[in-house]
Length: 198
Image: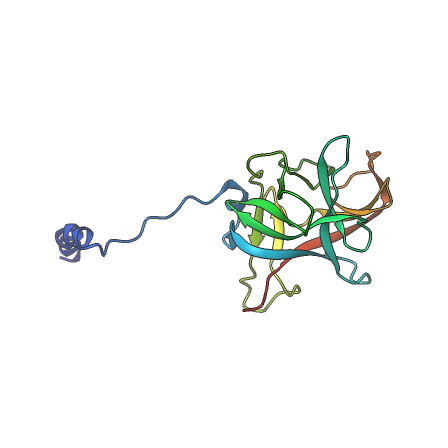
């Protein structure tokens, strides 16, 4: 009898607008997570070291290199000329807002592969859609005070490493097979999205 009632009332619910909502497509970068968020209006970034002996450090975007016009994410203490310190995320693409006098916004340039620096450019029309904010849903709380950043559905393989130029830069899936940074200097981190308190 219940089955016949649901068949009878289904067209009425649909016609009245009370039908169940349809789900929206989740960007690929967040598809692996039940707690993934692909859009965040404003945030800064902070590196929280896994070893817990190094204090958390604010991350900023350094000035682009003349050779490639790419900017790299690194620690505010070591980046000599920051061009971006606040960010926004839409459809899993990250945009760095320029600091005063720094020119156009820079966008996440490419889907980071293994052993890659997180790069941004002002040349691209749209950011690479590879990022996701992971919100804590554990009823026991989180070891981190803010949501965690993931790239390629992975939040566990970020490191801060000393570059050839002496800047501490964020590397995804660091490896010893590199000449861009000192692999021996790498420290594992979680990258947090620090959002204004409301």
